[in-house]
Image (cartoon, rainbow, N blue to C red; front, side, top):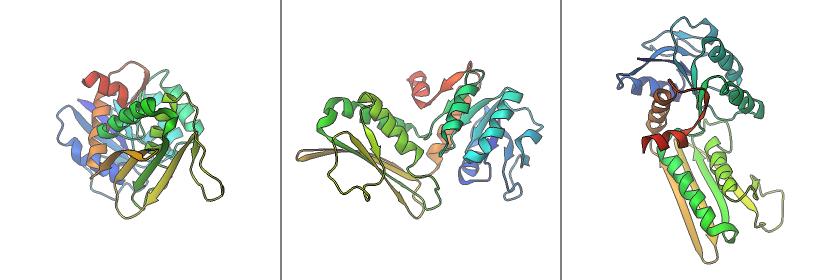
Length: 254
């Protein structure tokens, strides 16, 4: 049995994972972390401070916020636990600290836990390789009105993967309102929409002369991210130290 510490257990994704984990025989949430520990009647103890956790923990699933990351990484080091990092909006120093942790522990990191999104990324990379700089590339992402970071971590992940395919030759443009000039060829435009209860939608446009290719993924519920996070926890719990992602997990699933 894999024992999980659910960081951000009383958030929307924490509650989704709590519900979905009941369907698995080989994994259980042993404890949770939340700033509001009494918000829900969870079937496990909830702490405000991860250093207070008494239960045996094999892997941490983190859907919290960047401010919680330093203490969480210290917990993983102290308790020698694997980590599934799904929190977005990370700072440069957070990425560096997570990468340093992966030198001594197994860390699974992805801005999007959906299998479909990761297939979209592979399709977008393939399109970029075939179409090159003859097509303009734009990314549009939509999320609910409570999402704080923009652009989304997923949009940046898509942009980075496409840019790598194009030898890092592209500049990311987030706002065109201040530059009154035509679009340059070496741009990837990234636009954000926030509204209602949209779980998540990402589109990549390749716009050429007289034709447009659109690759799109729509999340109809948060369950797809929860299932991905649980599968990631099972996958990484017994791995050797290193940095893992959806790409590496999908390769082993094939």
